[in-house]
Length: 167
Image (cartoon, rainbow, N blue to C red; front, top):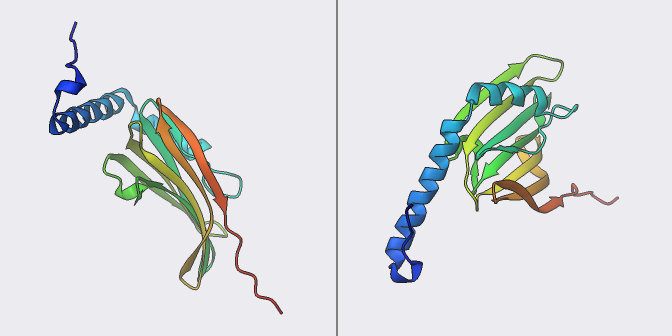
């Protein structure tokens, strides 16, 4: 059996290196254990509300399954919902495995995506819902989560009401 060194005997640099090494190992194990194709297909089946907007992400054995959507209301307006991971949009995430986008030409053009990202404890996740009009995005709501003990834990929600102009 391998015994870990007493952390008090390690330098700050050694602790940082050990932490980085452990994080990489955790992410690699999650990647090796997942079936990306199955997660993506299941995501397209179950990851969207009846409105077409995405549901909250799912955490599956260290792989965060993120759903995203854009629903065009007109040529100059749409509703959308996408995930941010540690201050980056999911498609820009450092540990992104797969990002699959599908478009449907329905009455309101829809773009849906399923993105898989390997995550470790401490990762911050936001599900952001917005509306765009005339090219300007306006935040509608945000659900903030953190990955803790292999689970996605809700830490904050906020809804933003559109500015109403008085008479």
